[in-house]
Image (tube, rainbow, N blue to C red; front, side, top):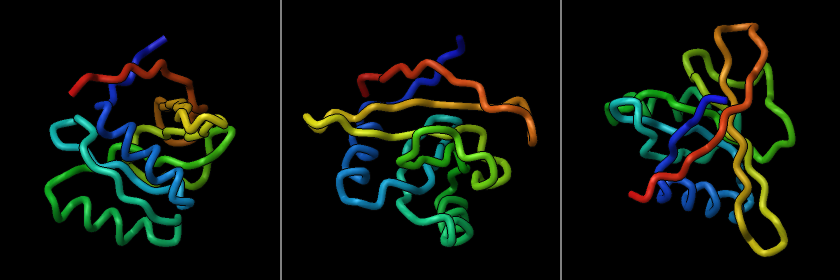
Length: 116
């Protein structure tokens, strides 16, 4: 199984967003390294994508509080989906998915947290 490396600070930001009640948005990357979380509902993805680009980042992933990959909601050019859940102790559970191309099935990846 392929791996996806995420900075620990980014995982913490995802946990914070999940606990805030939003739990959905986009992740921006610099040089293919995820660096920023942009909480927003799907209706605001265009504005979030524009903000990501204005900061010199690329769209890295869509994240959501969901049980399975969401096939029709991921913005074009966004290579990953990250699904969030929290257990009763407040520990975040992350699952990552990627696909070979538009219309291809989502395949799960192992997540490795980087100690940044």
